[in-house]
Image (cartoon, rainbow, N blue to C red):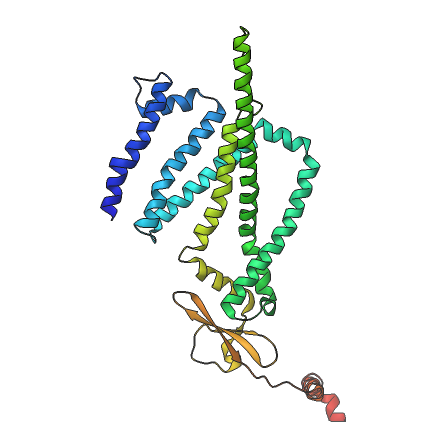
Length: 331
């Protein structure tokens, strides 16, 4: 399968990509330049918007074979996972920087500064609730009880799941922005084309600039922001060690008692989390998953108030005998 994948890259994928780039170069007059030379000249002499677009497209071209390899050749390849994650992070950074540096986006933010910040605060509250909901589902599926039975674990797991909630939110809003900007750019380009024809018919030779000068870049950047965060989160959550990490973090947060307190002996590293009276959860170390969870009965002998009073009185009496033996002798 790996040989077929390499042959596909060498004789189908990369020749097709080079052919498309060579065709674009010939239409722009770069007939005698090679594909790498054309790309280098484009990056060197083009505007910042074009450079961002070329960088994003290069990352996309490189990341497609990695995903194909993970999907059809070796789904557990660690090297392919690292390469895919690195490319997604780089592509996400370039897209975010290109959007932030856009005059249109900066002007929009300055104009609606208060409204945007209010929306961000609302989204923070929504995402906090959503992260808690995700954490409740994870804990309940792992241990088989309500997540509220493990309050510390619920809080810590909510913090861990907060990036997941934000990734979904960013993707949703980026997709909406991508659709709006893409359609608006097409509308403006069509409108400007009609005006150019009218001016040409009247003998004028004027160039009309689009109302969105970097519309393609913004549309492409928001498309990347719509896909990359969710893809990265899904990629990380589906990785072989993700569930193990989640189980270990839950144990560190909520399982603090030795299993011997519930008369479980001979299991090295087992820990207990008390529930209601007479019940508990036990975390049993597991080499593959980190920990396995089970519900057990854990009867504890509870003292009466009089027992506590007698115990304290006995402690005080022992203290007096140790510190003031002569006073006791006089009595």
